[in-house]
Each structure stands twice: as C-alpha cells, then as structure tokens.
Length: 332
Ligand SMILES: NC(=O)c1ccc[n+]([C@@H]2O[C@H](COP(=O)([O-])OP(=O)(O)OC[C@H]3O[C@@H](n4cnc5c(N)ncnc54)[C@H](O)[C@@H]3O)[C@@H](O)[C@H]2O)c1
Image (tube, rainbow, N blue to C red; front, side):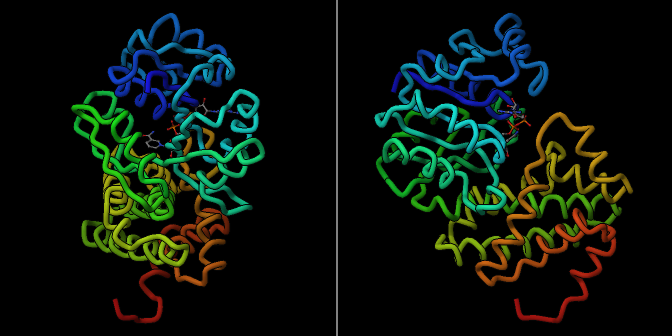
C-alpha cells in the first residue's frame, strides 16, 4: 500500500494524517473548506480543527476530491456521519474497485438508520462491490496527534481486508486489533456518544463517581443489547470499540458529547450550545437513530430514550436522571 487518501480534514482526519504519515510515502488529505485547505498547505497546521500540530510534508492538502483520490490504494473517510452519503456520491466518479475503503466516522444515518459502512456500500454498489473496513476505539484526536499510545480496532467481514489495514496503519504509537464484527464496532462507536451526553449531565449536576460508574455500566448493557439484536457479537462491546471508547468518552475532558451534557445541566439551551461549537458532537444526531433502532429491534434503551427526551422534548437534565432511577426494578 503506497498511497492513502484521507477524506475529511477535521480533528480526526488531521490527526490520522499525522500519525499515518510515517507509514505511507504519500498521503492526500481532502479538506472541505477552501480557505482552510489553502492555509493548511502554507502553514502546515489545521488552525480550525486541530491547532498546534505540525502536518508532515508528505501529507498533500487539497480541496479537490478528484486530486485527493487519484492513485489511492486506500480511501480513509473521516467526515461527520450526516455528510457520508453526499461526499461518497461526489467521489463516486473517481473511485475504483481496486481501492480499499476504510471508514473512521462514528454515527448512524438518521432516517435510514444505516451504519456508516452500509451507507458507503449502498452508494458504491451502484458502480462496483466495494471492500469496506471500519476503524473505531478510544481515540481522542489530540492525543493521537501528540503520539501518545493508542489502541483501536479495525473490523470487516473480510478478514484479509482487516489484516491489510492493520498492517498498513499500525505503528509504534498506534496499535490496531482486527475484528470480524463491524456491526458491534459501529454500534459501539455510535451509541457511546449518546451515553457520553448523559455522563456530562451527571458531571454538570455535580454528581459523583457512583452515578458515572452506574451510567457507564448500564450504557454498556444497552449498547450491547442493540448490537446483539442487530447481529453483532457481545464480546465486541466489551472491547476497545465498546467499553474502551465508552470509558474514554464518559470520563475524558476532551469529549465534545460529554461537554454538551455538562452545558445542558448548567442550563444552556441545545441550539445555543451547538451554535457555539465549530466541531461536531455526533451524539446529538445519533440519539434520534438510537431511539428508532431500539423500537425497530424491540430492545430497551432507557438511557438513549431519556437523552432523546431531554434533547428534543425539553425534559430537564435532572428529570432525565430521575426517570432512569425510577424505572421499574429489574434483574441485572
Ligand atoms: N475528533 C476525534 O477525536 C474523533 C475520534 C474518533 C472518531 N471521530 C469521528 O470522526 C468523524 C469526524 O469528526 P471530526 O472530529 O474530525 O470532525 P470535526 O468536528 O473536527 O470537523 C468537522 C468536519 O466536517 C467537515 N465538513 C463540514 N461541512 C462539510 C460539508 N458540507 N461537506 C464535507 N465536509 C464537511 C469539516 O471540513 C471537518 O472535516 C466523526 O464521526 C467523529 O465522531 C472523531
């Protein structure tokens, strides 16, 4: 594998370009914003989404999709989930069957309720049958860019594809494990953002570690229930893309979804919080899909349900927590 195209130059796409630069002779990084792409090419820094990190010289920044994809062996997409279908449609004329597709997006498509790899498959199958893997796990972009030790999972139904990506991406600070369960990996990476909003609420209300530990554990139970109902494996959710990412997002100060919960608990309005962020908090949109999937698969997802009620129907953060505590009593 010689040439990598990274599609999406937000925080995560830029961090991936930095950590993967030593592994590829040439990387193309597609940046949506024309002015940002120009500045990044000149200053070698993403001052909007990942300031203070130098982008290595073998990372070529472009605002043109055809240029980004030209000659790529691997296409690694890192755009927010609601943009995946549109960007892949734009890329379609330039893509080839020989390319490997890797998705680093976390989230679900509202409306269709598809996982991101399914959206990609749906778009590309108009032209050919694509080979797709997903990467996920506990990975704050800034820590990856700093070169701090990070472990993640690459999942695909095609074992040899997962192994190829593992070999191509693993390095001294970036360790990939393979998995044959993209369903579990993508559901874990999506639902943990919803639970993280709840964790922020607990923190914002001044509650302590008991509440957070309970939320993480019960959050894991509900994401596992959903993943298994959809055909995923329970053990995947006990791994890096499930428990690992859940712990990170529910306890880490760099988590945007947790920050949203904290701000809500401090009384700020959701639209005001979203307007003040230039980055995506995937959990807000994922909450809608989580609740719809819970209904479709007839699984209980009380944390997602209360987050949904809080985000969209105005119940207060305190009431959302109260309702979780007052549900009918159950076995674990
Ligand atoms: N930031 C992290 O630490 C991290 C870690 C792992 C996974 N992820 C996931 O990666 C995905 C991308 O998140 P991020 O944090 O890099 O994003 P970000 O919030 O830092 O940046 C937003 C991105 O959206 C792009 N964008 C905005 N409008 C667009 C449009 N109309 N068309 C195409 N692109 C457009 C921007 O160029 C930018 O790349 C998300 O699904 C996120 O959950 C993020």
